[in-house]
Image (cartoon, rainbow, N blue to C red; front, side):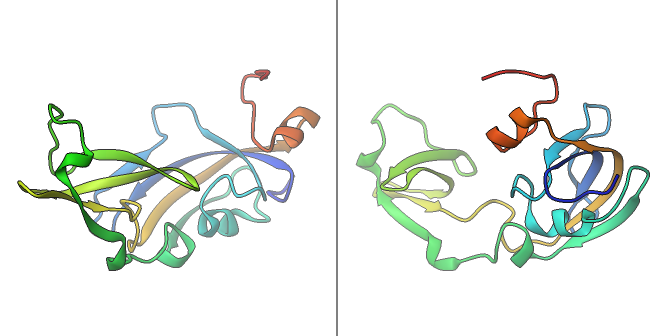
Amino acid sequence: MKAEKDKIVSLHYTLTDDGGVTLDSSRGREPLSYLHGHGNIIRGLEAALEGNEAGFSSSVQVVPADGYGEYNPQAVFEVPREQFPPNETIQVGMQVQGESPDGVLNFTVLAVNEKGVVLDANHPMAGKNLNFEVEVLEVRDATAQELSHGHVHPHGHDH
């Protein structure tokens, strides 16, 4: 069976940056399982897995446009310090959330000063090549429930 729309694909992966530093890996954990063709993993990796069967293994480089997007310097901005609770410790590198008309947004704190907090709305991996070592372990038909929910239920869970 091939990885194609409406199939459940299970795989092991290791993700590294261009310097070879491991950013994430499923090795030693449960494999990643996803519903193919429904945007549940980054576009570039899903495209590279399209049409492959269990046993497929490969090195896949996903460029920013097919991963988390290009880095947008205009997504960096400063907000007044008083928009944060007065007793909350804000540190460089921490993730904070804010609300917008489109829902909850995540930001990375780049700098903190007396006047404000500099936030970055880019995804932490925006602008980076993503280098995957992948091994497809299984491809199966999705259940009717998985198709109706748009995601995998690895242990048959019900909502």
